[in-house]
Each structure stands twice: as C-alpha cells, then as structure tokens.
Image (cartoon, rainbow, N blue to C red; front, side, top):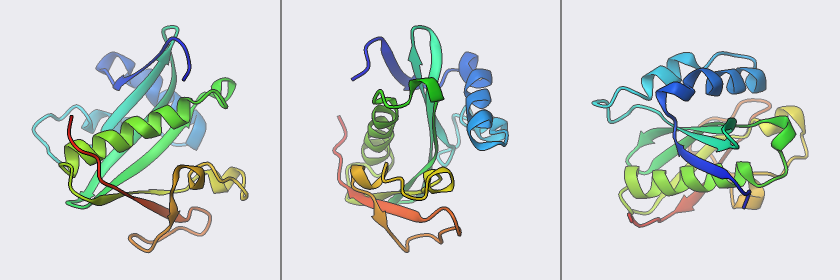
Length: 156
C-alpha cells in the first residue's frame, strides 16, 4: 500500500482536479458525471472515489449501478508519475467493496468494466490480474473489451 494515500468519496472541492485528471487520461470532460455524483436523492447516481497523496489528487475511479446484480467501473485514472505504486489496485478494491456491499447489498453479483487499457497497450493484463474475464453481460467496443468478475462482498 502507498504511504500517505487516502481514498474516499470525491468531495466537491476535488471535482475540478478529478475532472482534469480524467480529461488528461481519456481526452474528454467528465464534468457531468462528477456533477451527478452529488445528487444525493438519486439512487442511480454515479459514485466517484478520489485518491489523494500528500494533498494532491493522484487517482480516481467512477462507479455506476447498472442493475440489481451488476455494478460498473466507469473509468479508472492514475497520474502517470504515480503509476506502478498500487494506487489503481487500491482504487479498484475500494470501488469493488462499495459496489458489493452498498449497491448489491452483499448479494452475489458482478462488477464489470470496459477495459480502456487495451487502447494504450493491447497486451495489458491489469484487470485480468484482479480476476476480471471477458464477458457478454454488456457489449464490448472494438478496442475496449467488456470484462467482469463475480463478487459477494458483505456490508460492513
């Protein structure tokens, strides 16, 4: 685990920096998704986790509830200078814990994602090393295969 790393629900004061990181990583603004994450009375709102190290945003992950048995990791981004330090793994673990315990209520289900790492590196196995496998739960994109893994995480 990375020292001085805090992973938490994105705070409103962090939204601008989180959006900048996501925009640098994926080339598009995520401002509408980030704004929607603060609509508290919407059970289908996206959830965003921030990773902060030494007071700086170094990573973020977006989560979406697709249905009662499938949570989706929207996008995962880590500052290039901080990659390889376990931040992406820590963000994924937090997202999976939240999806399983809070959205799936501890019932068996799946977490899925479109593997955007394949765009930059076709041989990347980042998600496969965490137990994700090719799935037909949702359609894949030509350079972003849909991957999923079963989870059964009990609420704390």
